Length: 219
Image (cartoon, rainbow, N blue to C red; front, side, top):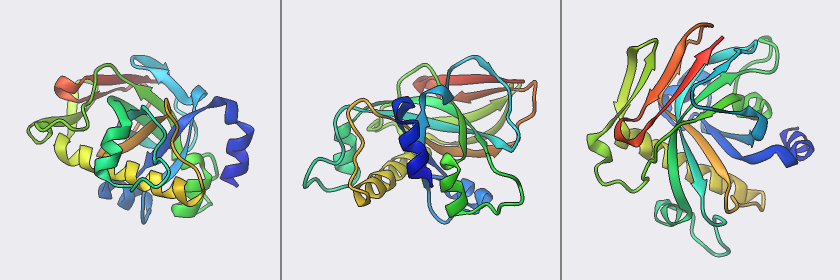
């Protein structure tokens, strides 16, 4: 189902999304593994934008947004962390609004979430640069801030590890379909601070410390 829908929107696809790269989000979403979906151009908004919450909103997550500098994997290339780091140009801080496009009567699980474009409704790409190979990542933290109040904080090192594991998972899923990420593809991976309740009027901020930040005003 999703493949046919993506083909119909192919000209708007900028890359991929990975939802539930961290264990906490998978438990909340009733997922057994991360789920992958298309990253559509009309779902991307700049940091600081105002966004109207859609029906079926599940919440807001902090995320990493990576840009690939070459096709990955190359023919015969092993899919692992070492090869992945050579394929990524950089990452950026981001936010994602998760929402269902189907009625609440449909159970939420791996199959329905995948068919629902990976549950990602809106992506914010923030300012700053995340170095996936930063040796000091474990000394940093990532915070989810709502209306100026810090509601969640995680180790940047742990969150980055989950995000990179999510990219490896995506590469294996694509390889199983005979596909790869292409040079210039953007991959957004929600992997930190859990899923926070979203209410119109709130301002969300993903604070990645010296790596940068992303903000979104809900309406």
